[in-house]
Amino acid sequence: MLKELSIRNLAIIDSLDLSFAPGFNVFTGETGAGKSIILDAVSLVVGAKSDSTMVREGTDRASIEAVFAINREDAVLFSFLQREDLIDDPESDELTITREIRAEGRSVARVNGHTVNVGILREIGQRLLDIHGQSDHLSLLDPASHAGLVDRFAGNRALLQQYREQLRRYRAVLNQLNVLNKSEEEQLRQRDMLNYQIQELKSAALKEEEEEALTQERDRLANAENLSLSSQKAIEYLEGRGVEGAGILDLAGMLQRTVEGISRIDSEMNSLSEEIAAVVEELNDSVSVLRNYNDQLEFNPRKLEMVEERLHLIHTLKRKYGGSIAAVLAFERDAVEKLAQLDHASEVSDSLLLEQDQLKEKLTALADQLSKTRKQAAGKIIGKMEKELNDLCMVSAKFDIKIEEGGPDAAFTENGRDQLEFLIAPNPGEGLKPLAKIASGGETSRLMLALKHTLAEADDIPTMIFDEIDQGIGGRVGS
Image (tube, rainbow, N blue to C red; front, side):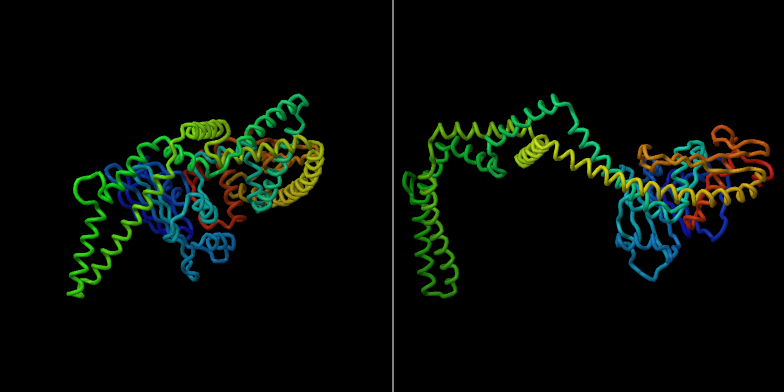
């Protein structure tokens, strides 16, 4: 359960520290007093989207800290926390979540001091609390939401994930089959295009590292004359030819001999003498390196032209097929694979058809399993809902869940092949009808309250938060 909540610089709240006791906690106050801001703060610590406009004017950041008492028997929550390495003290029965919103727009979230992304907060939040907003009861009027509510009660989350993964693979196979089943004219056009692209790329024979080497070679060839003059001048500076005064080597030699003379008298200078000797040796080596470099320089306009043509080809292919040589080579491999698929379309099609049948069989089994668990859950929900509605002064109300199973030819959707819809008969003598056609505002609010309570028992959610759950309810029921 939520034990403590600390809010700093959020909207109109400067500083607020709240402690919650087990059981029923109520906030009351006039409009604008800040009740909804407290709800926003709780929503933020469980992954709601942040907005820099939430930061109190005149401050640079807002922060919220929530401390939850956690049930160590909640295997799902603890398994997730351990997997994400968010448990520092295995014996602790508390979880601390903080959310910081900066005025410039950034948001930082932490769990037990560890920085996490908002997706992690949402995963944890699903096990810690359930928030009912002012307009959430309107979602009951949309039958598209009903399957999710029944699945939540049935504990179908893992089963749905397994089903949806199979559905993703099934749709991918269908898409591949659609590509293969294009008209012969389209396949011929595609084959011609692929052949042209593959031939162009194979004749280019690109290598991943060649662009950098070619660029360096182009620069050397284009500046060969300047490079030669500069290297010759460097040699002259070292040897003293063509310049006034002694060269660097001569001066270094004189320096070496002078310091050697000193070191023969005073051994304290031996180290310096050795260092100077090493420098002189490196300078002599530099002359050899510069001469070899100068000898290897090419004045070859034709070769420069060839290098530039090669670089132009590389740039053209990059523009057509990818932003880098690696991307171009990947495009070539992909094109070869696509051409092979077209050339062996019949074999590939047979293989895909077999895979389609296998996936459809698995999907059907999973969809049937979903239908079975939904029917079992629906019976329990109906019984609990009528009891809850009785407590909410809808004594004669009848609640039902219509489940229409899809047959063998029904399409696979994200939620299986069933169509689910909640039905209600609020008063004696009325037939069961969809909520949108019969439920009043007050009845919808009571239905949502009853449903939330029913689902909370199944989810074992320790904290439920309602924002104006009594909207549309008055008199004895509201009290």
